[in-house]
Length: 72
Image (cartoon, rainbow, N blue to C red):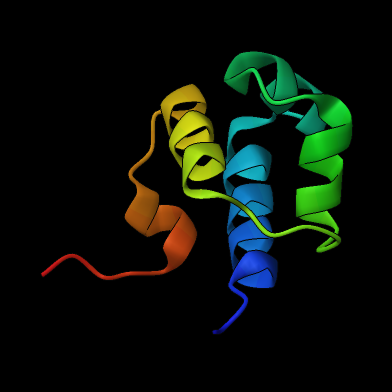
């Protein structure tokens, strides 16, 4: 099974940079603990589907943006 964590983390960083937000702010907005989000962002733990949904809701973006999936 392929680990998509590095790609997702990169895409989250891009969206955060575009919006001028920090990882700490994202943690607060998404309800994901800072330590948990940090482990996901550094690749120590994989993102869960729930993480992706919470991040997308906080950033008002579609999961395809984080997963690098082009819309059909």
